[in-house]
Image (tube, rainbow over all chains, first blue to last red; front, side, top):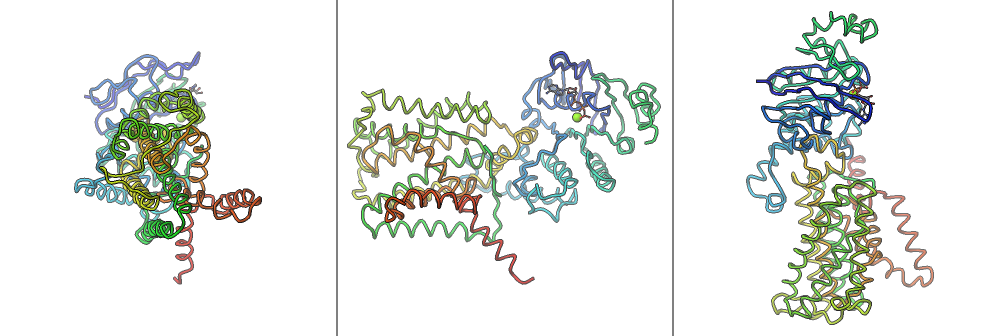
Length: 257
Length: 327
Ligand SMILES: Nc1ncnc2c1ncn2[C@@H]1O[C@H](COP(=O)(O)OP(=O)(O)OP(=O)(O)O)[C@@H](O)[C@H]1O
Ligand SMILES: [Mg+2]
């Protein structure tokens, strides 16, 4: 059974149809890429899936449950965690604290625990700190743990955002253009991180403009254009797809990749 | 409203920071005990405000939201304790807890719909709350005595054991204020505190990590209301008299000055700000007509040169010392 099923979802903004009758499935431990030109409706699709706003029609099922129209924090609590196209860090907090906040979903402590600090609470806090340290190591930020997040170079902020999302132990991770604005080396480091997350068993949907990155790591690709799904298939199939080549201005971008 | 969240896990090297303000508070208490009743009274007000501001800091500092109506909950505490203890003969401590609970419930009822609003709308809604409660304290004369004010409120005491002098009461107020700060410190360094900091930092990011933003805002608002209520009750017992002006707009302005001067979002900032803003005008009394000018000048200078508030000063020194240490 698919981990995520998007069934016939449509989103209208007034007269604009940002997503039109889009359907696709994502299986357990798949790495799916969503590509398409600017304004194709990729981020809108993420917003619908992650509950940021409800679709005009259609349904989204996650892990067998209908999550259509559920508020975003509930969707996240169910294990579907997203990042944003524009970096959204807790900029005044340290790098380590950013990741510690990420563990909210998988921890329990409330006001009572914080006040009386029983054993289980102390253990949980310790595991939150240790988990954050491991994740910073995983993405290569261990040297910057105590730096304020906004003092990180941009490329590393994107890695921090991924580490923070991982702290929530997502079952499905949605990454919205994580490589945007990164140089070649940074993109490679990010590709390596994404591949390792995927190998660790996490299902991933990746929105990305960098075709070489997509072609290298995606198992399957969904292509959007003007709000519609125009193609779906393996990287090899997508590269040869006439509609995709047409959508990408004669296909130079895709063919060169 | 811009939020200034400072890090909530302070490195071990800075632990002395939390010892020195507590020692400072204790020293002030001793000073108050050795001075005239007038000085004791000023310090008493300072620590009552410290409790009020420590609560407000949960909502405005840790969570990064704006509330201009927190005086409403101080009014519930103040009038509630006055009526329960004077008319109904309740024990002050019992009345304190009862009005804190009442304020908490009121905060849930008011906060549930308004906290869905953002930014300026939330600020306006809370401001309206303060005005409404102010009007009630004026108009509902059978309950509050209106402009006349409510007199003859008994001093604070514990089950029949009264605290007869202002000096006894100052000790109680300092202990309670330190307790309030200790609670704030524990709550901040926890999963709960991290959720509040996340909301202050970025609501979309908080939501995407599964944090129920509306719920945590409401809890922070309720905590702030409970602290405000306690401060209102303590004021009533400390002075023995309350009137609508006590819980008016001045209280809101005063508490904002304290928060920003002391360091919003820090654990000790509210208390430091409360003490300085309360004591400074008295210390400048000798300047006569220049008093207000000197007071304002000092406030402005502090905000220019220590924009993160005075509580940030100690960490500034710590950093300075680290940087000057030989490698
Ligand atoms: N909240 C909104 N209100 C109104 N229109 C919107 C909203 N969000 C997106 N749109 C519109 O929907 C269309 C699709 O936008 P979307 O952000 O999903 O594109 P995208 O594929 O992510 O583009 P990009 O590659 O530039 O990020 C655009 O025309 C955009 O202007
Ligand atoms: Mg987009």
